Length: 330
Image 1 (cartoon, rainbow, N blue to C red):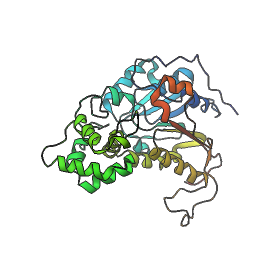
Image 2: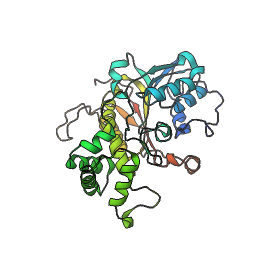
Image 3: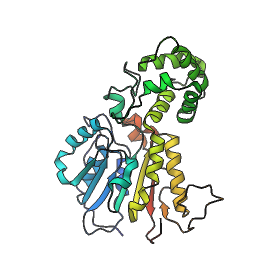
Image 4: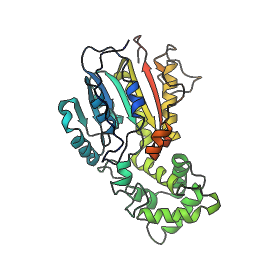
């Protein structure tokens, strides 16, 4: 049954002054209208960013409130300013979404995740996430963290560097790139995005470089994931969300590369089979009754029109699942 979510006039957000354009927004709204609710409903926006998805949801649904997680204090202030008109409809938490259990005190109706990094960090943060500008190799989403990309590049051992590039960046030239980095830093440290991008460009032969994609893209992705422990954080939050989701509630997760998507897909698959442990299938002795119903057999992807308006949306994948109504022990 549909509940009494009240929709207001939807705005066109494509010409936003903000760096990040929220992806798959209409698809997300389509999943927020199937619970019964006689009062306010609650959605956890676990990756607030500049507040794009939250603004669209608040403008479109009158009786929804948001609990918003954002670990980056700088971008959180941007979001607060953007959402100032919504007053008490948003609760802000300046921390990583891996700490759900610490902050959430009651069940909620929806979880929304938009994994990866926002356009704000690429275009405005000046922390070395991209290589179009000469910036210091920082890459921290949480500026209170001690580990910087500079530290990884200049102090990690060669094998560990190669493993990071191969595992997190799926970079086939990982060993040669790691070797070149270690050889270079015998003479001087790699300090800037330009230093690192130029080195990778020299290592990968031109005939193996992919057209329209900078050769250093995968290395930068791998460094960012390592610095921010992104996959570990995703794993932790996926282990927690279920116990805070009301029966009939939904989790919506947007991923931008295969490593993120694989974690979401695997967790949904396990819960759909009634598995809550981390053991291999042959050792699992969990309750076999389904805990989740997967609503997207295949992940939803942006339309051609959306990709034309926002090229960065082209790799986005949305997976959605619903908590089974029957009470289960978890």
